Image (cartoon, rainbow, N blue to C red; front, side, top):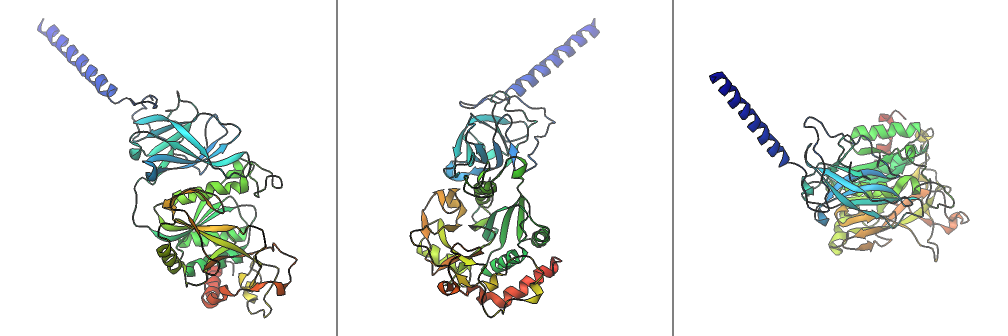
Length: 435
């Protein structure tokens, strides 16, 4: 009899404990205020899979996500840099998780950037607004509000969780796209070494592909620590255009997704770099009244303290016109593929009634959206830097090929760096196994 009582008491104790456990678990379910949607708990031992690549398709859609950031300027929303098919718009939902088990689902605001050059796909921001987003570590964009908390899908890690007042770099150059068999080794080495002399500490390249010799040079700079290479396999997902004019350069998205990578680079370096330079691989933003970029920006920023976007005029130095002395036609570089910028000192004049495009030096914390030649959304406004203070040295095919050498301007600014530049380029080419 006593044994039966003990068994009954033991059974009641076990039932009570199980009941308490259910109450405890229920108090930790995903309860949230509208417009949040209830999401089921995951298995306690299951780890949320992280997206492995720089471009991730959104399941059951024509869209893609790239990276996610907390935007502290907008009350801590989650901003997901995305590629949206403008012809296949649909509701999207945001699942954000603060731990492996605590996730919430909210509606999103999809903002397609105004500059898309009429291509079907455009750079976009998918904005997630909800409670306690500053605690989130992972985010998923989905088309299905019912199954949106499926933790077996790949989530993006959330960056920029903490506002920084000091920065790892003063100047970062964002080179938006490298594709095809581009193998302009000499000009790239000269540009990189020139930027070092001008005060740049960090360069970022979004790389789809390049030529074999340039690959060696990229590996050298990556090992050295100055270059960060972001894999950009956009050709595995879309048919990217190699130009900006959809009538001439057919494809799904403008210039291998240039607008996406420029915006991604700004947010990637929001709290890593004081300034970000947005320019192409064959362009050098060159101060003309200052020895380097730090002294240039110190003067510009003190004169324009609220400005966050500084526009720099682009000027063409035709690679078809060579300086006559031949002093920089070095035998050591004869077998190095690419353009020798030291030989091209003739600059095209401005064309009347034709817009002279600009590139930018920006304070990334004041930019929300950017295009190639100007900022689409920023705080503080833009300032066009005078031509005689700073301009872009852009050695390339001429835009005014009919002009004779006598009709061009002589501009020897790069020669001011000749001794250090040549020495450093030689050293780099040797270390890369190219010289």
